[in-house]
Image (cartoon, rainbow, N blue to C red; front, side):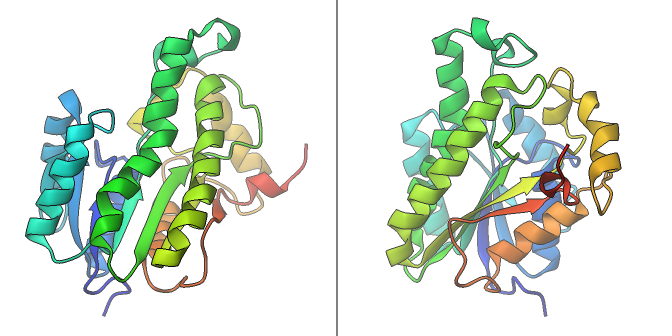
Length: 255
């Protein structure tokens, strides 16, 4: 028996088998869950190809969080497939090139707005998709990167992550009466496709392992997957509005 036996989950953010969301999807299936993936735009085909690498190939639905019609279409598709949804993984993030890499004061609002909508407001969008299908409650988990620091080169994506963290708390407040939990996993740096697109990502790699009490391997996302799956299960029934750090303890250590 797995801790997700009988659970039905919507999982966003699977691009390649190096994606954090892929590790969650694979472990979720191994722990007994049925899953559906989403993809968007030109990356949809990539998600569909990567889905074939999972233990059981899941359905892949198109969900662009900037397209309102997609919200209703995905909700309807899930409702037709299942009688309910038990959980969702938010692993969505994007910032235009101008928002990363050291040009913080030069990034135009038009680009910042894109980063905020896709990386933060989208948590509320995912809730719009799944909460109507959670008559007995459920769990929404988002993947985060600690927004309490100003990181090298992270710039407006760091601001978007701060907005994501605040959004999760307000959703936890408003969805609690529906028995829907909203939590975030603040992961340490993992060498994913998304991470590689961030200028200066390599600056995190050595220092993170050196300063983390438990050490850190940028190529190993197993701890993130296990923590996320635990949050999607029934093992944290009274936890909401929380940010769980899965970073080797880096966040707790001073300069």
